[in-house]
Length: 119
Image 1 (tube, rainbow, N blue to C red):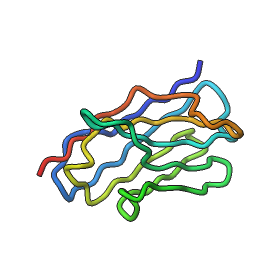
Image 2: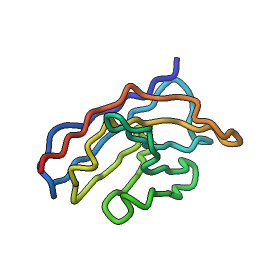
Image 3: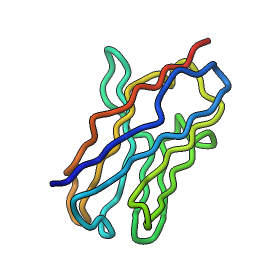
Image 4: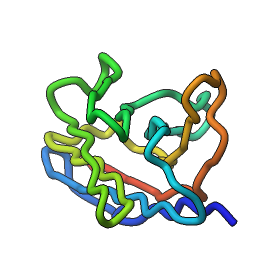
């Protein structure tokens, strides 16, 4: 059974940092792209960042570029999202997701972790 479990969310002041983790289990993910998405209250879910597990290439939304770094630890089957210089508009539930190579829709999703940035 595939599981993506996010952790690391919490309450932080504007300008602060958080590191989110996504522990993946249940299958081999070497051919997957792992993504982070977020959804703020009353808004649609939006893409934040992604990393191709096999080659380590990463992609970022313009809204977070320069403040966020996505990385992976293959030995731990874990993907991280380091977020710095956080802003109140970064407040959202953050979700980890897995996209199989060749497909266009993310196949697996985690339950999400809440990030709240106070001003």
